[in-house]
Length: 460
Ligand code: SF4
Image 1 (cartoon, protein in one colour):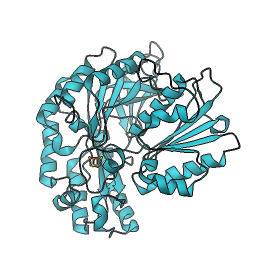
Image 2 (tube, rainbow, N blue to C red):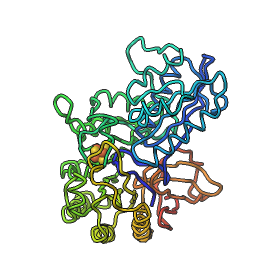
Image 3 (cartoon, rainbow, N blue to C red):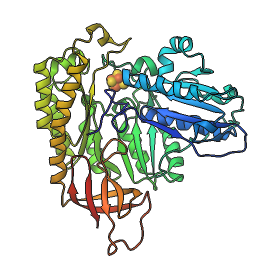
Image 4 (cartoon, helix red, strand yellow):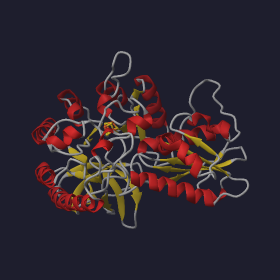
């Protein structure tokens, strides 16, 4: 089980705040830019867009901060751990500064705390919130080349066969613990045509797996003229010939409709995989979180999903230590988790955030107790995941090759999302491998072994 953040739209990769150096592109200008991207895939998309603009403006994108003339830190800032990691990274980058280097800090942390940051960190040359990142080329003194008004193609910094598609910005829900609407504003969906155009461009660069992200993907389109929905968006994306897998992340539980599930069941390109952050199951806790639902309705939802889409993989995240979570209510969550038998689960401890409604409830559960509850939930889930994975032995799945080891391929079946879920190690077999596979190739795998996180298999 890997860690995940409480906000549906903001999972953290690999058990903590993800941090990645993006770079490795060259261009004609003498200005070398390095960027470190923190936090969730939505921030990663913003980072790739910034690099795309800088690259189009003639900058060289470098992966080594020491050799950069301009360093950009794209921060995350919606919970305490993320804020700490962001500050630590800014200070690390500031230490590398010499007379010539420029340090620009952008992203959620800046959006939230720009005045304090400006006072405390004079080493930083420019602060840019989540809005206004288009101005960064100008800030560093290069010209943004947008004669047609068209956004330059974003720099794809990860494996070329997968790309995140941010279908909306912001969030119009009001979960009481969440700082995101205050940081990124109300939901603004992107028009379907624009998304299809971006997806086609991503596909032409080799992307075969599209991962749809937003704070709440089920609310897609409600703010657009004609109120298109997620279903119509997915149908348009599925028509792109090169696209093989479409993965939907961050669904809001009470908005998962039968119609949506039927589309998922019937559309072969949509991964039979859903990430639905539930946060809790106990009715009073969910009410105080301003999310609604209770154990019975959540159980019914899971049953409905499994009956409409048999064999579906589920991922969820839960929050422990919310102010109104008593021992009894926590025990109910543990018992729910045992019954629900969810494939992939992340557990987060509550972080009291200024500007949120839940701030007024105080923070009565101690940090030690929150960590204790988290470890209990993780231990329980560990057993569940191990059982689920063992029961998969003998199953056949389509998988994508992610990497190549000494005598195995690192693959992901469609029930494993990149970064947050496990992987499938597929043994190389001289008999069945008529040709060596490359990252991005799709294969059929028979599962032959399992642990709590990962699967093993052979090629079919
Ligand atoms: S307010 Fe929106 S972004 Fe925050 S947890 Fe709720 S659904 Fe997610």
